[in-house]
Length: 399
Image (cartoon, rainbow, N blue to C red; front, side, top):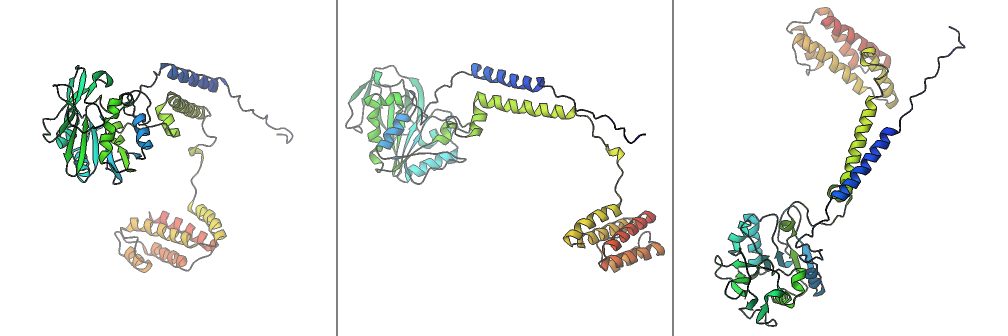
């Protein structure tokens, strides 16, 4: 062939823009569909940051305006905070365990206060610990009466229309609980209970100091009575651990992970990332096989490996690892041949080879002795390559 002739240059195939364009279009369709099909979020009841009717923003701001510190009880475990003097427990998604209810009672008995709204039959631990439960019966009478003078600044009777619709409290399991507000002759919607040195206020759902309840002066009369035994400037805690459970409902979206997991736009972004990754994988498969397959390559000989590693270790002025590698390779190969331990010292190893099962022939035993002695003398680069080649020949002849 003429030296002036060269092979024509092969141009890489032009990549089509339609596939990535289709992925972008599909991502846009999913994003729009997710936004249009997602209903507006419903207000979360008893949310400390919620300004809706069943939120607790008004209660939180009122407590902060009075100088109290507001704290959330969350995390991986429920523990009543040592620096708090009052805990609010609202109807929760995650039921109390027996140990958690006992810990709350012990915390109250130590001289603290708690406000428990409800609870219903599903939260059996709280019901059995304090003896008060929600009766589950709606009331329709028009007035609430103050049966005990625990709210001296309040009225003797409150019109029913000032309150949210409320269920009654069943106080049969707690004879020491004292009714504070009652619905005529039907039963109590608010009661106070002495536990050890502390106090527990029991409120029925609907008389629970939410935003809509505090708009009427009647529920606002309850808060000064509850705070009467709480030191000024103390910490007031809200049990958000049981209130929102493990689903993180009610928490604000504060991180990128929250946005990805809990919003339609985040879901669409995750889908787009998955589709893009799948596209790249499929594109990689269409590039074809590698130019040189495994079958077309030959295995490297041990001597080549030693020579390559010797160049690296020569730059680092370190050959101990190479010598140790060759010693292990020789001993393990001959140990399998003669059924002996490769961990023996050189002299003991040679003696074991002579009496192995089967014993190593004398010529091969002499070659092994010469190689081991050569490796023990810290050979140079050329001698190490020669010894590696000798090991290859010995192992091949021994088998």
